[in-house]
Amino acid sequence: MTWTPFDSGSSIGTVVSEGIVVADFEHELGARITIERDGVIAPFAITCGIYGWFVHTRFFSTHDEADAECAAMQSAMDAIIQTIPLTSDPECDAKMAAVSQAISDFVDTYP
Image (cartoon, rainbow, N blue to C red):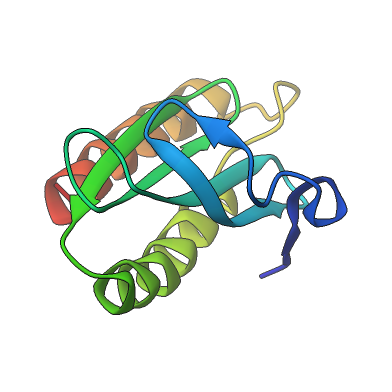
């Protein structure tokens, strides 16, 4: 699992849809997860997604809670990313259905 600071950390402190970015990571295979603070809905939010597949946002009361959930979500997102097939895979359609189900399960697990 390879998560690195998004855009070399230049997004930290910027204002985005759910607040001010306090942590921002990108997966080498095409995903992003961002922790934001001081939003309108909640003190902290996590916005995450796999490029071309989904975007999901969660809300938290504390930074510690958001940090812990971010780590768990990164692991779960990595597992999903590892299952995305190449379009040249002869079993691509069946594997795509499994990826869609894994994303649905992720959203259920991390509401």
